[in-house]
Length: 46
Image (cartoon, rainbow, N blue to C red; front, side, top):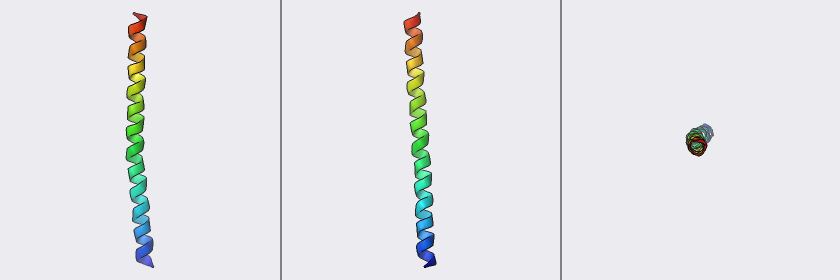
């Protein structure tokens, strides 16, 4: 029984870590999109 609980705990921890990496990439990508939009606005304003 302990090995099943331990396996499930490791699986859950792995999912949380993987979700964190995916979230970081998503936020980074969103930041790049916002930055590109800001540059386009600057160019249009000049």
